[in-house]
Image 1 (cartoon, rainbow, N blue to C red):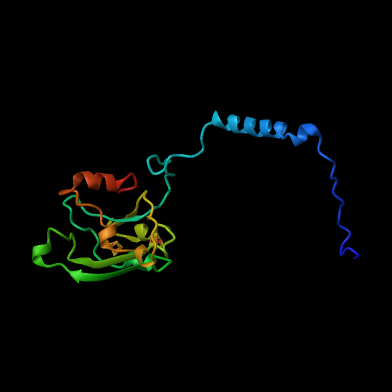
Image 2 (spheres, rainbow, N blue to C red; image 1 turned 30 degrees about the vertical axis):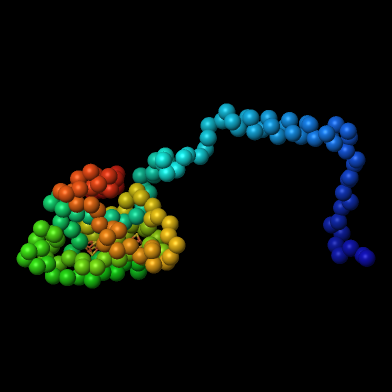
Length: 179
Ligand code: SF4
Ligand code: SF4
């Protein structure tokens, strides 16, 4: 049958020598490469025990901030949701009751606050739009999940621990990007 193109090349199939058929030079060459790598600096780290330092501009999982008295800073103004190009933020506002002054800093607060991490592009515009320093992007990843619903983070996941009742957890959660 005539070839379709003229690109076909005949392959040179020289018979292997006895030395080559023993595969010893090839094995020795392969082992020398392996041993060479054993003494080089490892490019991998034992995550999660060890982590690499983050870039100063890294933006990770959102944190809903509290003030020094442990009150939620968010006033449910909706500016973060309006600024979000991915429409990833939704919230429901509620009026603070007189007995809730120790829980919420402003007269209005977010009774419900959700971020869809599957939509989020971690641009940080919500952080920039917030007039209350109530949200910032931390140096933490959103952990993997098996369901799409698991990537919708509510206040339980986003709120930073209370600095008054949980000072250690608060300091740990604050990280280096806290305001
Ligand atoms: S980081 Fe960007 S995309 Fe993600 S919630 Fe904030 S504004 Fe939206
Ligand atoms: S996080 Fe900030 S911008 Fe968003 S609703 Fe709360 S106070 Fe407003």
